[in-house]
Length: 286
Ligand code: SAM
Image (cartoon, rainbow, N blue to C red; front, top):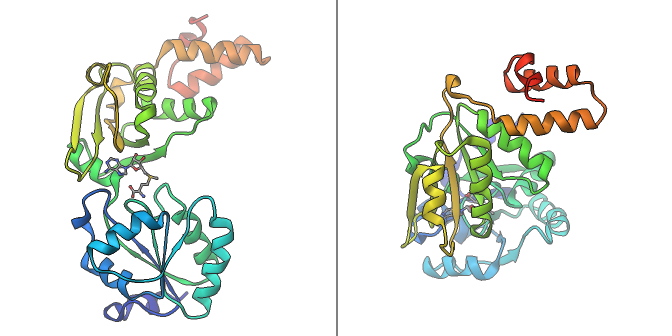
């Protein structure tokens, strides 16, 4: 346990042998904090996802410091080097292309490695697209689920979509603009057209846009539009009494389980438990 050493001398930042996870803007450069600027100016080096991108922030705030690239393509090679530098007394800042390092970017891997090595790590908080979208949505925000990017593999993706369809808490998802239309159609299939959502586009930027409506109307809004920019989706949770399981999905699951060799009775029992239904209700779908 080394808790007290981390909590004492914050005014002397940056300290030797500390990794700083520094939150940077998600669009609006004025969101960089005074503390972040001080750390970025004074650490031994900054490890960033894209040096060209981070240099823009550095230029705006007159930060001249050593930059190295640290991204998903080189993280396996770079992590041992960063750990070695930290052990030798350097202070290092990790920044991602946008927002909080560690949220859906390679910052997560370095944070885990550094903790494992017993090296001190401090998070310097900054903007995060997930929380900015959640608060902007006006949907219940004290208890929520963050799913990041949904898995690409169909079976894993459908498992999460089913969870979202039944979730009583607000859910936040990241998605690329290219795949937004597909995701909206999946949400329609799993959650139904009446579920309230918000698509947040270009948060904190000049053309920031919040499209808040039910899924049917949001699909209509984006129909025939060329979707560009950064996107975060916020989905309202259900009231427990509202849950209306999607019968066509359960029927498909039932057929899949029977094809895989389960008896109708066993498959119905399993799906009834999973979806909060009576066994007879599932049984009758066949
Ligand atoms: N670490 C970042 C954070 O703290 O939010 C997220 C990194 S993740 C690789 C990038 C995704 O975040 C984008 O694909 C998008 O879904 C979301 N995002 C980032 N900036 C955004 C913005 N200005 N508006 C809406 N969503 C944004």
